[in-house]
Amino acid sequence: MKLTKAQARVLGALAASTGGMGFRDEYGRSSMDVLIRRSLVDAPISSFGRVHITNAGRAALAQEEGQ
Image (cartoon, rainbow, N blue to C red):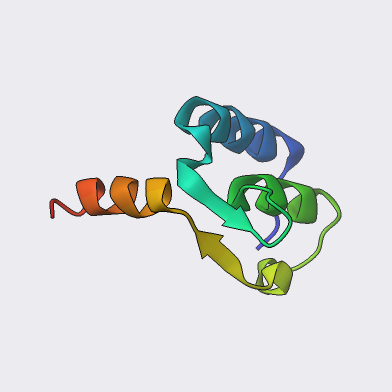
């Protein structure tokens, strides 16, 4: 899956408005930042590597799932 630059900009705006939902990779970048960067250089999403979920991210996911 590759994103166009317009799609990446929309996702970037969404990520900024949600604070990245608390997802961080091992370098402290949000998963959305990594997704956008990798998509712009046509790298496959499967090359993400591990993504760590912070407590804020867990709380946001739990709230979305209605727990």
